[in-house]
Amino acid sequence: MLERLASAGWQAAHDSTFDGKINFMTGDFDWNLCAAADYDDVVRKMDDDLSQGSPTAIALWLPDGTGINLLFHDDRSSLTIEPGANRRELPGAPEVTDLAWYFTRTVPCLADLGLDGLTAIDGYE
Image 1: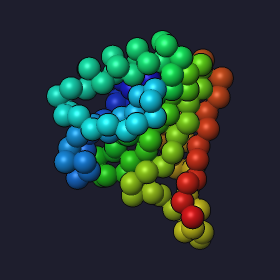
Image 2: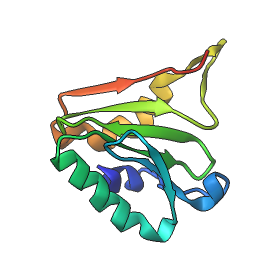
Image 3: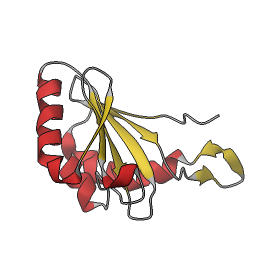
Image 4: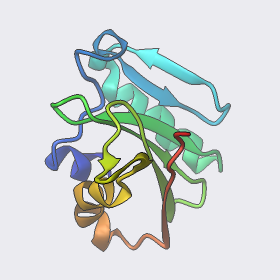
């Protein structure tokens, strides 16, 4: 999935956030930072945790600094997209996140992977 999202411009590290480090969560629900050079190790750790039935997550970024948190559920067939930094607002209703904007930039590259579910969260108040 991460490779497909990378083909759509999503990156695991962005210079303007976390000093260019990767922000990820493993099965203990503790977010961690590591160097961008350790990307392959992060992916292996996330895969190991998923194999053991624990959810994982990673923050992804577009070049313009727009971010999402992508939560991989332990069933490996569903995921959650949570808008992060530089949240896109719904035109005419800035208190609401434009979830369609995020779906448009993520779902097409994941559509044929056989996901059973996709959830987006508008976590802003």
